Amino acid sequence: MAQRWSINLSGKRIHLSVEGGCGGTSFGLHCAVNEIHSGGRVLWASPEMPNATRFSQLFSSLNIVESSRFHAMNLIGAMDRCVDAIVEAERSLPRVGLVVLDDWCNPTGRIDKESLHAMTELAKRIKPETTLLLISKSGTDVTSSEEAYRPRSKSEFEQHGFEICGLYAGQKNVLHLDFNGEVQDVRIEESGFFF
Picture 1 (cartoon, rainbow, N blue to C red):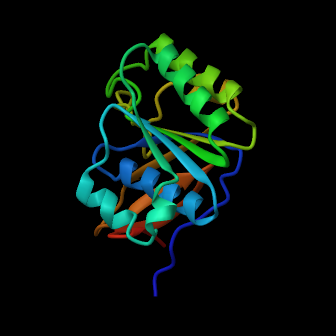
Picture 2 (picture 1 turned 135 degrees about the horizontal axis):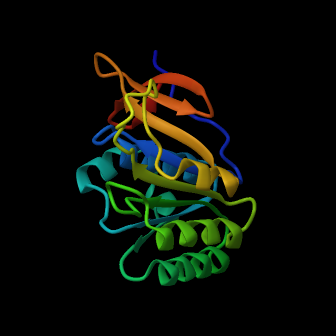
């Protein structure tokens, strides 16, 4: 029987680089469900809400009270103001354990300096025990290197204490999840990620 993917993310700053269409939003929602199951609260910020069908599939294991610990915020306008709103919410709500920003930057090319600066500021301003998960599309490899995925702004994120992780396609509906160089084969099922 397949085992649900789980890892202790407490207090980490993570930049997840996702190959297009590989399930980055589903991964963020999977982590949100894990956090809520453990008694925590989740702040989710994105320009758009996740697909309603996918959202309900992933959240089906939570009851209505548990589901109320998921707080969605619309990520529009100046990024520094968005960061202020996230920090204010994280400080005012009890037991926020995970902050997720999905599709928070331009989907291609270099991540603009304002967005990058806003994320490093967010990482400094939220509580040290709160996990920050940034989900963005991988870059395009123009150098023909052997890297399986190409995280954008990798050195800048590493300088600010972020762990760089990746999610990319394998063969036969298997995805590769690279967490700090440890690559695991996972499958996306209705209720989340499984080994």
